[in-house]
Length: 317
Image 1: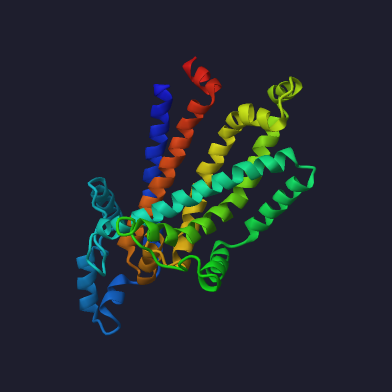
Image 2: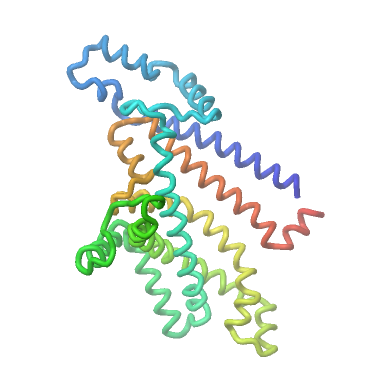
């Protein structure tokens, strides 16, 4: 068990190093000269050279990369080239916004997908199952930004039940904080649930074909009781895998939704930094998001052993 954990930790660290290198290479390859953007079109070659030296963009690629990684290990993500504020200072108040949106959307997606996926599996040849599968297919085809705009128009503009955009910090007013997050969380959760329903349906269909499910049915258990007592735990392994893989999609969807609902999260900061060619901020935010995805995937790998006793017995032997 301990050896397996060390192996997964090693994979996590190697993936983190590879991701940091890829992020640095991609951001270096982006077109544009940040020195020219900062100084404007009237800058002389001497001024541009001096600005590049100040920013450190004139140094060799590997030197810049190693300095960036070394600073990050000490908790320093650098300073914005435009605001001159530390990247950590810019990200800190926005982490809670993105974290609330992602966690709320993912939780809502699971709460929707589990019962609907079970219905789609148990009633797959009847109209409830067919309708659920068809609705999920339609939901997968709807872009997140379009769904957000529709919800804003209906519930924020026509009915005026919820605020259409903006954000209020939790510490200032918990009620308004929750009301401003309802539409973004519902948008993200419903779109992701449409994807998860298909995976939940497939996982439960595999359980329905197992001997232990048929045995439970043969002794008089109902379909729902047999599935809830035996199916959910046995299907959870594949569901956890899908949730880990879907996390990246949830984060990307959150970036789009933050823009639609004017939420001051990491996604909005990232898009603004890309627009201004502020590569220090782009690298810092991307690295934090990649770290979160890799950490969740590592947790998913570890959870396999906790969920499935057969894996624990196999690793113990």
